[in-house]
Length: 231
Image 1 (cartoon, one colour):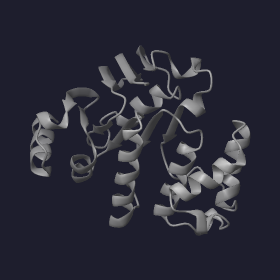
Image 2 (cartoon, one colour; image 1 turned 90 degrees about the vertical axis):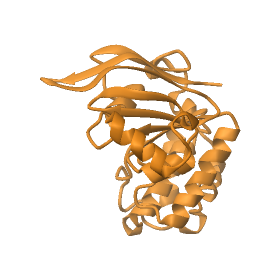
Image 3 (cartoon, helix red, strand yellow; image 1 turned 30 degrees about the vertical axis):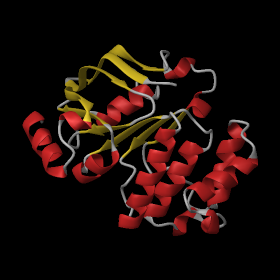
Image 4 (cartoon, one colour; image 1 turned 45 degrees about the vertical axis):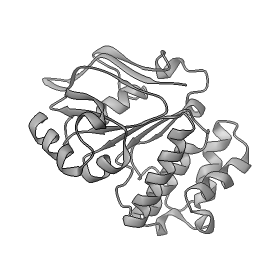
């Protein structure tokens, strides 16, 4: 099993400190909610974990090593940061085939993940005709392509309708039950309460709480109260 850890993670942009001395562990076999208001440092933290942003100090580790030192990083870690990184004229299936070819992943895996995210019937459509929810599903398919042990997802329910949100919840719970490590960044309190097992709450770049959801309470009201008191 592979966990995700941060040790004294800090990032400054000029005079602005986006992330300040954050340390945490995202355990394997669980869904961890990374909760905070917009601008709290969630996306910057995820980008440091993925090696896209260099920390000012501290480190982010995947299974004990930095992302850049993973032998096959895209097969070990799947990520969804935004649902806009698609060529609008490319068919959904071709978008995934390009990614698969870059990682030497068999084409059959493309068909598998399209089915997994319920886009099999839309595989031949151009991405320009996709709704935001469909783009989210395609982004999740790309994250799943390498069958990774770790998933880092930034606002994955954005654009999904209630049925899509319920579908994603079931998908993530199934993946966590297989022993995968899932980190789900969101500002939607109701979805955190219904989806996750473990919670990290950040505000103004600082970690305010880290622990099992049961320590806060199982209801939306309990989580909202904790969020308001901690941020």
